[in-house]
Image (cartoon, rainbow, N blue to C red; front, top):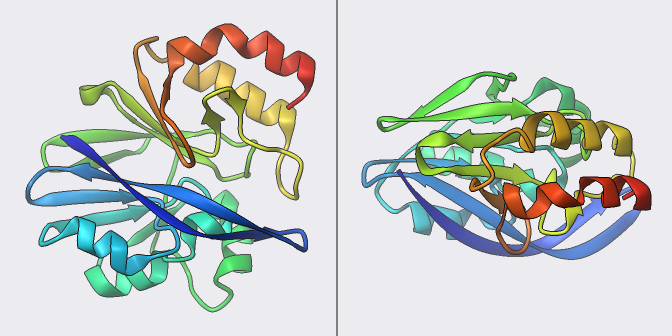
Length: 207
């Protein structure tokens, strides 16, 4: 299994504010199949990156609009189902009031792409239904907006909670091998080993 990144640009809107953002869209797969992680902003650009491969599923790490705004269109273009943890339905409805995801994600679920397994980890905090995707075969975890280089994702807006994200990171993500590469929803990669020593600093600063 290999990993490809497509960077797309658009806006994130919540609680009456709107911000310009660049998003990482991740493609996991091989020459024939691919899993799309977070269909953000530009379905056409994502489809171009996929090429003639079959899209097994469009996986949403959470339902903030900047991570799901292109999901229904990409689904229509590729025929792939959109998968979301049901605890994020409230956020999905803000982005897509007239559409529904095609399937539900659950903690411990295994998604298959080619001969590879991708493990779903429920990591609430940034959003109630936030998930991370762990691919042990390649030593990588796709964290959406749960963990970044330098700390947790933001928890200052509706449906987010700082103690909850700290629990998710400490109990779930920081138990992964230190060499695990962290592919984030925005910005640069990091690793579990690079972030783990800073947990107490994040708790003290409160974000």
